Image (cartoon, rainbow, N blue to C red):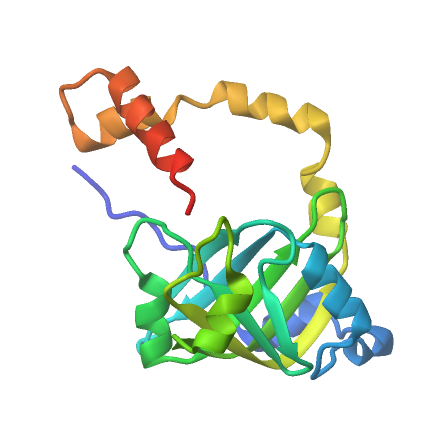
Amino acid sequence: MTHAPTRPRRVSPEEVRARIGQPEAMVRAKVKDRIDNYFRQFIAHSPFLAMATADAAGRADCSPRGDYPGFVKVLDERTLALPDRPGNKIADSFRNLAENDGVGLCFLIPGVREVLRVNGSGYVTDEPDVLVRMRTEARKPELAIVVEVAEVYFHCGRALLRSRLWDPASRALAEEMPSMGEIAAAQFGADVDPGLLEAAVEDSYRKLY
């Protein structure tokens, strides 16, 4: 007889606050509503971010974005723009922003333990003056995402320290993972050589722009 899995107990927001306590005044004060020179410098040096969006029903999605450092452009102290580079063409973020304009960004810089967080609202643009600023390898993107900043602040480095993300020894973990070709063959049920699938994956990665 098969039993349905037991769902863990749901903790209320009041219980959460009672257990973790209140943030210190300095933590609350660090949240700003505009991009100052320190935030601007961090964005200019960041080659990677994670972007969170949600659809009209609140179903969330988080996608990685990366390019040369400074690929995200600061248009003014309250506005950012992210280029849309070639990817899997699922376009979850575009669909979500059309239904719900809320967006959250986490910027990282290799070797830096703090993360820059940006919350606000976003929309898609094809404005030529914006796209031309994001030209790379002699090509400019077809679209960009504009983020109107509501909150911006540095998140403490505890998570990256605990994860040892920038520790060179952590790279050994990758050796324990099967290749993407092996994973694709198993998940798709494909009766093909995983090596051929891996070659196809690598070929797609070479077409960055």
